[in-house]
Image (cartoon, rainbow, N blue to C red; front, top):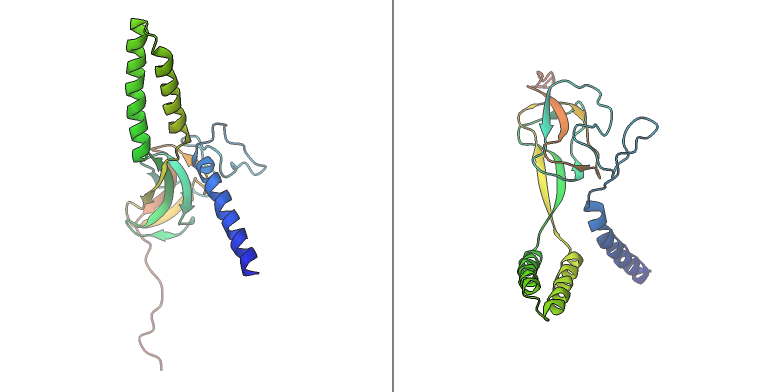
Length: 194
């Protein structure tokens, strides 16, 4: 039984690692509204287009600093937040050292191809083949995954949420809005029990 579970776990990890780059890539089609009017998760969300109808659209907006895929949302509407509290986790791709190296080689090879083309050299076909090989290697490499966090700019209460996990958002897009300041805490404290 443990062997079967181990094999299933390995298959699950392999499938998820194959699908992760596809999930991180931005979707090009416009968002598809559902029957309730909200966009479906995992679709591209245009700047300013809410992923779900906000309950209250009052207060200041909180925006992202870079584009990426919403990995997790750590707040709900009406929740009190503190300054610096993580609200949204974004996943974005970074170039690896190998990808940077390949891009440098491609630029050098393109310059060589232009020189050989101008000189009408016989080595042009070999240079173009090498250029195509380098471009193929670059397309086969996977980018590194990095996370960016959107935090609360100050203490306040969240009034709306405009993203869902799986949405691809652009930089400077509003992810939520909040009202600054904390309402008075009316929790009754018991100092002694009689």
